[in-house]
Length: 322
Image (cartoon, rainbow, N blue to C red; front, side):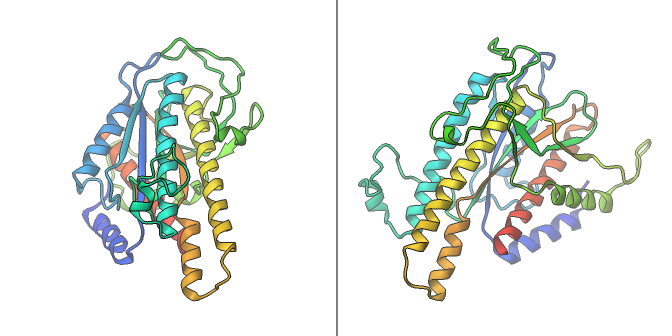
């Protein structure tokens, strides 16, 4: 558990650096075969409440906008629909951020100055925010938190999902425009976050704050990196998310590079603007498998997720400062 001094040090460091924010989109799941009360539903909702209330129990996560939270029905069809909604909004946000960086004013945006009439250019997050999609799923056999390194283009459901769908060795469909990034069956797509560094930071704080309890082994880690998210709806969700993040990052990174190359001026101000453009539309996804509450209690799981979000934000800031 975090000590008060540790949390205060984290908060002071973040505030003094004055860095841009991370915007978190948090998802969990409802019940499915064999799991009538999914702990990720509880974790997702309680994280959102604590962040909205700026609770000290969540620490200093500089999320200036209320987190976007979704509890998914555990079905491929529902996940496809909701992920489509989420990424449509993220793409609108990226477009809005791009036009604000280029100096397009609100009046021009509202009048359709972007030549993209089917998209309402309205930013719901800061133009300097990096979006992190945190997907939570339960592993009933787990004794640790599992940070999933990758997802696979393989829908092979061991049981039927909540809508009766049970594919076997099928590709996971990607709707347009992300369909252009679709790989072959079995393709492995990895998160763009550095999980080795995240685990190291989480373990470092865990070991420094650990309190000896009965039957608890001092120094034992509660977090690991996994390369096998299964092939059920968890993997299905993660594959969709990683591919759509990759598509948005490629699309708007390419646009920013094109805009920068068209400029003949290379003043310090222009160079600074170019660096800012390259970094503002980044999107990352991470799937975390959590154990049941009877293995790691709810309060400790919430504390772990808070620590994880702070560690991710620190990593993003370090990447931006290179």
